[in-house]
Image (spheres, rainbow, N blue to C red):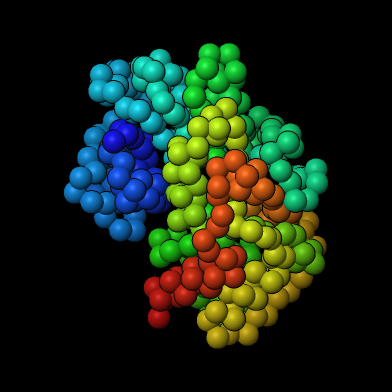
Length: 308
């Protein structure tokens, strides 16, 4: 039985990874700072251990890796944690971390695949993701560090997180506005493409990468099987709740002036997010179990239940 430690295993993505691996017979340990009383979603089985660790603390990591783990997964990596895993984890069988498709933007082609340049300017939102990805893949290239990078798009699904809203954030006001049939402002013509990933499918991609050794040294875009325009995404949220969708199309720069506090989300949401998952299908056998439409409807209904 392979021993896995999941950093951030009490967080949203990390919890689903823990549940997926535990359900398939892995010996799983959750490593976290101990700040959450309970994890998201479903409680993991009693066989899943928890340890309190600051992954940026050299003394904590040195002590932690006195125990041997075959696999390390980090749901929210940092340059500090990567360096300490590399230094103290010994001869790992596999290291995997959760990144993002965000640093591909603006996309050079559609659907975008893993051959595209992945970068971000210093100080921008995805810069740290780009640094971490580069670091582990360089360690693989130079030192044989057995790393795999998983790059999800917009993560959603289940009862735990709010859906992305019309301004590119996760405002709690979004679904109540849909329920009230309020007019939703949308950047430009609403035709920017959005491609979600259900959090359960994302968790499964980590297991599939572990079970296919060809994934070492690679990065994978993990999404559902197609994108849809933002305006259709918003309409689908309303339809799921039996409501009429009222949209106001506003030039992006005007919308930024109206909502300066949301400028980052607005600009990103007006950018195409559309990706090929053919590499993940071919190399690790990843095929989404959820459809785009089912996932959007599921999230909208779970969220609406909080307000009704």
